Amino acid sequence: MNERPTAAAHRVVKEAVRAGDLVVDATAGNGHDTLFLAELVGKSGRVLAFDVQQAAIRATRERLEAAGAESWVDLYEESHGMLLERAGRGAVAAVMFNLGYLPGGDHEVITEVGESCKAVVQGLFALKPGGVMTIVCYTGHPGGEEEAGAVVMGLEEIRDVGTVEFDLEVGEPAKEKAPFLVVVRKG
Image 1 (cartoon, one colour):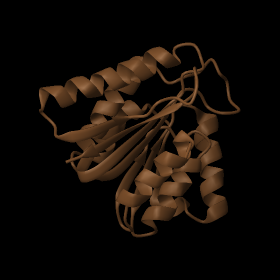
Image 2 (cartoon, one colour):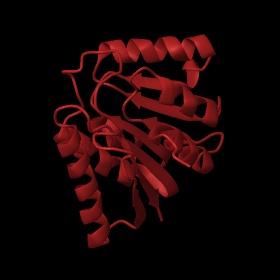
Image 3 (cartoon, rainbow, N blue to C red):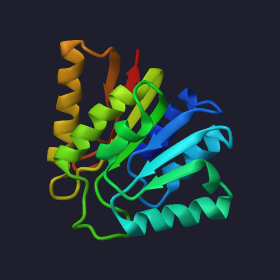
């Protein structure tokens, strides 16, 4: 089976999240993952969604309103580097990232290596035991391969030091410059 990274991310998250959970969409984009998470946690849960682009927040809000799911989602027009401050330590069932640029948006505006690495580490600390983090790494744009490599290397270093217990799965791209999925399962 050759599952798309985004579909695989949804499958992994769906296995870990329950109604009433706190979850994070670290890169709201056009709101697809935000709505997916909102539907999983339901009205008794909470979704925190981040994006630095006003257009992304607007698109996400419109998608949520059309589905009637906006009341349990907090949208932040700010960097995902604020994730831990907003979510808290050890409280989150799932964190989802899509690294790269806003589909249909300005391809010059991309997630940045430093902020993404910081946010992924924060996501790791925000996860509760049994929580999952998915990171879809897009590598076909300038800077994408470097960002993906830095994120994976940073997670490997943290795992190897052993200060936080988690399993790390790094998917293989289907072809050169294709996106791939990174999955973190916190112990």
